[in-house]
Image (cartoon, rainbow, N blue to C red; front, side):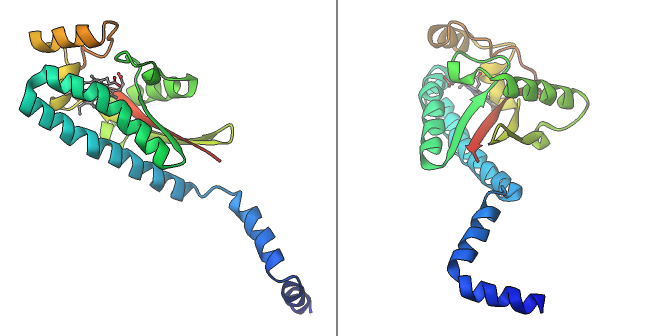
Length: 192
Ligand code: HEC
């Protein structure tokens, strides 16, 4: 009887009921879908920047690659943000010099937890965190230090790298890293 009544109601109210129940459902964030979207954007970011960085190093040396990175990295972040409903950036506890790379409170504590996870043996590639904070879905994915990164973030930099970094980033804090450490993270935010 109840089922019959419900069916009758559904038919009587038609699409409006369906729409309203749908919109209630739509407010429940689909965490798996959000995470998948975030991971896709992170892959696009890294997948665009890293090959360009390698190419610039090979073709024009470290000074040229630093110049390329200083323009390209913020541009990729901006374009990915514009093309999606996400705010996309990279952050670090020892930021190079870009004010955008300075973490907010949530990012800072997440980066600190990433360092702890790395120190207790977790591989940087698997370190990430997702959380809903103040009606925002936030996602961070760690970037570990690979051999390539040492050219510009390591502890024994070439004279050319040192000179270019001093020229472009006089307040640079992003050197002295060792292989396997956490250099920083991609940080993505979406309003829910
Ligand atoms: C050719 C030099 C160069 C190499 C190689 C390089 N970086 Fe950077 N990195 C830079 C520069 C320059 C910036 C600042 C970009 C900007 O102005 O936004 C930067 C910024 C970053 C940031 C953003 C946070 C901050 O400190 O500003 C992260 C994270 C980062 N690099 C990670 C890496 C990782 C991981 C690798 C290796 C896969 C790497 N970098 C290799 C030059 C380099």
